[in-house]
Length: 322
Image 1 (cartoon, rainbow, N blue to C red):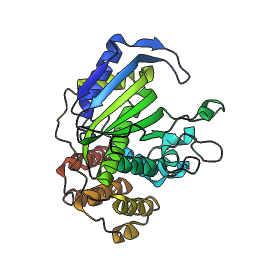
Image 2: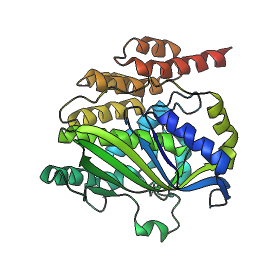
Image 3: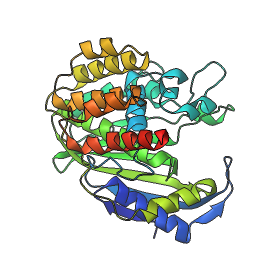
């Protein structure tokens, strides 16, 4: 049987996947270097809001949130995401465009807003099997692009009274890519569910090549050595009602913070504690070298599950100063 894991948290899914890769993964030599690989895998996150890793190694909420904002903005230029993840510059074309950028393909793929399309389709027929977003395109392998989408498509199904989401991945790096993919896709799942006024169901991640690069083998072992992680870092439910105005407000805040204009970011007031907490996380990244600013933000969170990420940033600053 091909691997099929079902867990309630991202960390548990990562632990089971890494353990099996280290034990039974086949050594293969793809383009980007030696890996251990399992193929034909299914990873199911039964609680999509448990999308946050509490691992010291992989608790990357700031870069994951920054990448989500990049997707939601519909951009394909490297500058917005390079602010959070510097290595993205390696994947950009000479023009500064990232060929495989998901945001442009989600919201403007050859002129088509695919997210709006699946929402309209499910409104018209909640039982539809055609609510599919295409991310991989045949042209991606006909040219020598620096970046090719790892995701083939995502499908939304309203079943058992809830919005289920399935991602079909041609390739997935269990250590570097998987935490960000789970965060972004389950957030998209919840956004679509809120837009349709339905509950959030399971998130299913189907992977052709699930792999661990040899260069990350020691880091993955350190992740395992941390032991089982707390199940507490579950994000609260997204507020009821259409989320798109709140998303646009968050993107305006993110753009101001990224440009260094913190006062302008404060002028845009999030519509609820949920979105305010996400804005605080973005502000914390912009102030990541200012311990006084970070300390003052800790008490502003409505959801205490976000506080450990700021505390870890503060701890790193204190260690660096000694």
